[in-house]
Image 1 (tube, rainbow, N blue to C red):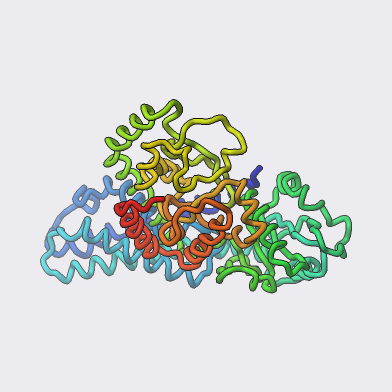
Image 2: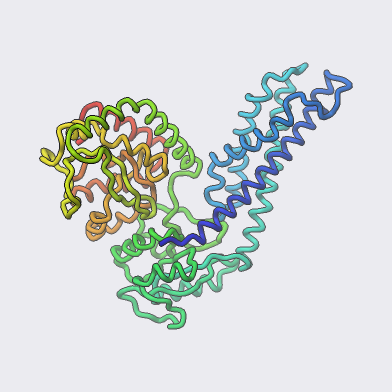
Length: 477
């Protein structure tokens, strides 16, 4: 069961920015075209019509906006349509427009016939200036209107406070009195264990068991955890339950110390809370990571297609059963998905043994399965999971819900793993390897937490390099 209200709002807001950027890029291109025709070409071409088809003006009316939308998407600008600081927006626009203008200059303008090289520099400066001023002006207007509506309670987000004790009451009072308004429209409260209820009973919507129904019926978009308990297990237990509903998860500042590492704070909401769903990887790196996942996985599937076909035949001939093994795993924000692998074991009926992890010299593994596991060839089909967006090339290994429940009892902070997409390989897989019991999973967890706190494209590249070394050395198991 998912709450789609916040997702829909974010998508609508992102589309507004995209539409404005398209209009802005067209207007800027038109103004730059005028400049080129009037200021530059008039110096060596006389008696020419203003809108002659030289430089493919009309043909580029489609290509130029597509180019700029791609650049702006790559910069991560559309990732957080409601969480925009005007200062960050200024520099984000400045950098992306500068980079895009530089590319556009070398793609379209470097071969222009000019009477002096100074016109090249002039063209670039004017191109960059026009695009930055037009694009930033349009964006600033929309961001300012959005902030005004939120800060004056004209727009808001249905919010549920988890807790009904002293901290929940203080959180509610803070939201009601905060100026400018935070954008959080508190719908009600949820009671939790070990908490004394001091909230007006009419504002209490139910307990944690009723959470799915309440989120759906009330259209909840944001949740704020304000529990009196100082127990980390209670906090992370609630986090893990909330992940599956696709809602915002925030904390008052006094709970911040419970979290592993720093979490950035939203700007446009003016909310005095931290958001656990914030990914520490910069937004532009997140988009490059996704683009790289798609490109590398697609190329990998094409290049290894003969090997994939060969392995499929070997698996089919090795023993009766399906070629591919699929199993439900838990991914980003607690979302379940079906992971793909080549079958490496003898086929058996579904039972409790399905939860038994593979170990060294496991007699359930087929001969070809041993070879595939040694070089991790059984995981090649997961490239399709990556293309679908369920996994990434690099990220914490996804586990079954059966084991996650056991891990959370001993290591509640495992809930933080679901902040990022699971991966085919990970820091934990490189440094620790496969885990054949819950205790080893928890030991490997320290590397996955370390990855989340230091996540970057550079770290991903290093992990991929070490993964290749591991595969070539045959240390897959």
